[in-house]
Image 1: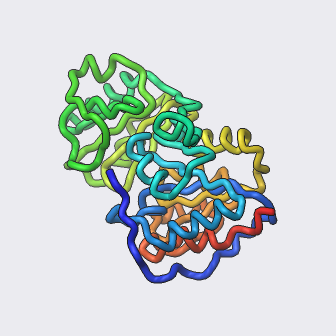
Image 2: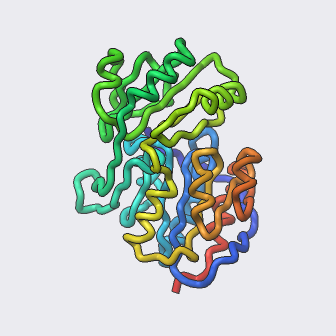
Length: 286
């Protein structure tokens, strides 16, 4: 996967974040936040990220994407040091140009996918499943839509899907309406895991207690950044915990109502480079 830079009009004026002067940890989601819906990275967002890093802030990508799917974006943003959070918090990377590939996995949390897979298979017999294999790709029950998953995709038997612990289970039902889908997911009761429903009939399942927020708290401690100097920006349901965790949680203008409701601020739509307005509003780091 490659990331294309896109020249767009200037983003809205800087947002007043209300956080104190000093070095910040700034957690940024990828899809619908950093990247436009067509997968492009605007010049304005790229420049705002580079300015924030040069000023002394720690910009941390926090995404539901796998390591393989997230890395091209991390690389395109020019992030060479610090940390990144992938797979909704189940995988944490330390960025280091001296490491093979430019990173090292410093935390990886797995769970047994069998109970969740059995519940979901019974609820939606026609759905497709993917079990993440970190740094490799996914074992899948059947082909996924083109471009939705990255890495090596191996069509696997049921026994293979449930046979090993995983960092993330992804579920997609092509025939389900998203509102009905979300209601049914809540009704069937996925226990012992953490899950987030996407903007389509798409579900990401992670280990219990694991979210972007839990991984970011560990990163915050590693970086020794005070909690009152944390900012998070996101646009979807898997960002809810992250926005609540941050001293200033910012929802994108394109976020659903329930995401905006937990945020402290709402910035402009991703099409207007709302993330750049947030990054421009960061107080001086020194």
